[in-house]
Image 1 (spheres, rainbow, N blue to C red):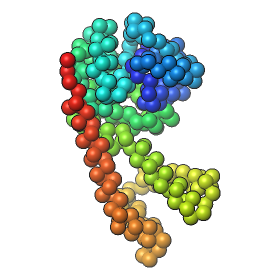
Image 2: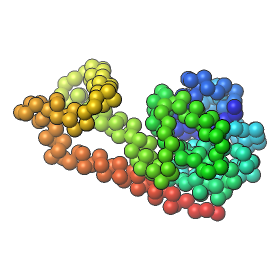
Image 3: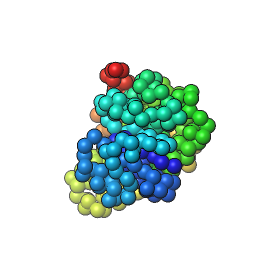
Image 4: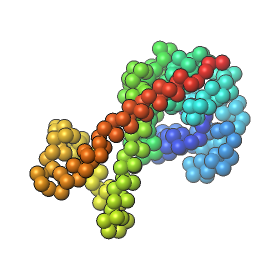
Length: 270
């Protein structure tokens, strides 16, 4: 199978890393290009052994899957660029936030699978949702599901759900890293060494995640189980509630969802 990436940013690298770690596709069959960043392409070649090129015929001839991984604002330019090379059987796997299947098909007359992975793909832990155009074949769906399952869990959804999934799990790792930033800063301010704090934070997250995975209790019940009246946890939770942290996170995810919808409206079909 030959797969070509249009775009060489963090999502493309995460997917490439996951694919290679799982040995799903040989490096010689993975092609990558971007607009003009030679250094980034050379880094990917040196790090993963993938093929890099600016020659569109080399990139797109006899390709099984084309992964669109450019920034949403550059979607129109990328689609126009590859348009002459697209065949009716070419499968496009788009990881562009906010860019609809109908928009892509208005320019490229071929099957489209729209996906929303996250950067945890690099370690095989992505939560990926996909939506399909009606002309995607069973083999194309199976190939794509196998590809994406190698970098995490894959779920098929209706396309209208993808904006919400983008706001929740697509951007989700960044929200968790943001929390960890705050925990690390607080650890420094209360006198804990950075290495000690990092180990404690990571294990705390791992333990809490495992509890959520195996327990029948809701997150609220699990929280209440460790929040003793008058205790330290209650004191900390009170500060979070006074600062409306839960409301801020809800607003955060809703705003990310709205931004995904805004992106789709800013793209103009030529």
